[in-house]
Image 1 (cartoon, one colour):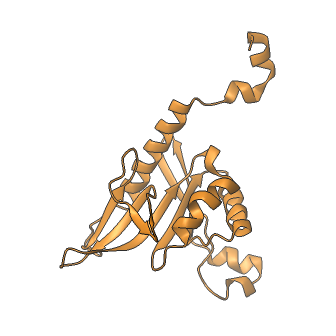
Image 2 (image 1 turned 180 degrees about the vertical axis):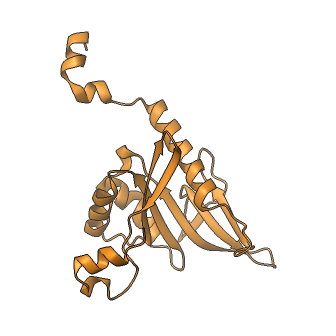
Length: 179
């Protein structure tokens, strides 16, 4: 690619390197775990958070396969056994696709008795919801994240988990949505 081509093709100019994508993904996972899943807490003294990036620290057994969501929260019993409480997937811009929804998100969401939360970059929340609806992936909470000059920011973009939400007019759903 010549210098002239690079300036004419904006997509080529804006392509991020694999190293940059991986570093941003790793930083986002650690920021989210630190801000939203810092267990144990006084309310949940038995919960423990495990981060599976860059190395797997807590795999989840699903049938015969073992999967490793980005963040896993377990409840540790007095007997030493653990119960899975929630799984979290943190997606980059490149991962907000139907293929990723079918490959990973559907597997995390299908785990019985555990909540599944999906974090996507700001601006991709509606697209992630659309993809999950199309792929029939049940997500307990959609969140967006971004880095700002003031620090790392996380926003909830989910609707209330009410069975009556679908029956409500959109304006009422918007008023009841969590800020």
